[in-house]
Image (tube, rainbow over all chains, first blue to last red; front, side, top):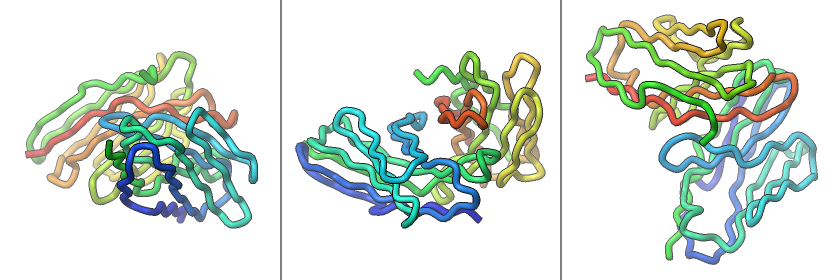
Length: 112
Length: 114
């Protein structure tokens, strides 16, 4: 059974800090790893990673995948209060024939 | 706005009843996925349709069923509802799973069973 474990489950930091969110996984026939941000409603797509060692970047957010260690991190630099959300990590297995398996998420709170 | 539309936004009903949740995928997306999000279980994959055909099944109960219509919209039917079915139900869509494109989520339907 596919499995995704995220840590920490909850994190409180001050505005301007840098945070690193962790995601480890076990999946049959790995296809991709995805990061989503969930505020009040729909999970919003951030990154999709398929290749090991290649960093994806968007503004202050970046992510990297290690397929050997079955691990990914999501970094957020110069955090802002608008970054407060639940960050979800998901894996796509089964060669793309299955739905996503999600972790429980990291609840990030940015204090002003 | 992801382009995925779900209706209704909220649904309140009683145990034993049956409800239908509706999803319209993003324009051009052929694949539709249904997920259930509860506080204790997190986001769980229920079922996937691609171009009208069932493609994959996850943790979907026998009391639940879904279909995708020729215009690609999808419906999730939940019957003999129990208190434990109270959750947020999300629909997501993607172009084609074989193309390696991400799934985009709708805003969800919050189902409350009284």
